[in-house]
Image (cartoon, rainbow, N blue to C red; front, side):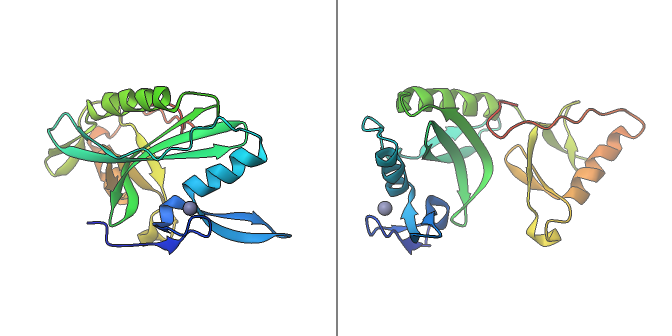
Amino acid sequence: METCKGDKCEGCGEFTPGYDTVHYGSLDTGYRLLCTRCFNAEVASLHGLDDFENVRLDPIGLTDCAGEDHKFHFQTRLLGDMMTLEAFELQDGNPAGYKFELIGSPEDDLFDLLGKMVARIRRTLSVKYLEEGMPGLQIAGMTVRGRIEWDDEEDGRVPLMIADGRAISWEQFGQMMMSHEGWQFKLEILDRSDEI
Ligand SMILES: [Zn+2]
């Protein structure tokens, strides 16, 4: 249930959840709270991008290899000469779990980009890097792919790891690594829009 109505967009007047708003403006002109769509419209007119498809994409449901359903919400953001498409799950009204980002140009067909996004999500959902073992969650094979996030509980001191769309504390991640004590590892950090 998404109970949070959010704040009122100063462009269209619609109540919009926090993850879908942005403070837009400058020190000189002041800032306005805009929903993503109104923000995109402002950027499109500023850059003369009359053909930009400023559409709101409906969420879609996809099933992972363990048979669990995931609902993905989409957000497009126009940033001058580039456009980003993000896909994310919501938990208590905030983005959490699996998250994806693709970068395109404002001239790109949004539905082409959406098709690429869905294909990427499917590829990711077809693999699980973690498994329930003894004791608790374990690394299933020799590789873990995921995301580094801020951990409120730790005040950002150490990361919160997201793998298989689930949050793993740094402590818990360390415990999982101990099943490979004495082995080597290779750590590679990639851009948020790269496919891992
Ligand atoms: Zn708006």
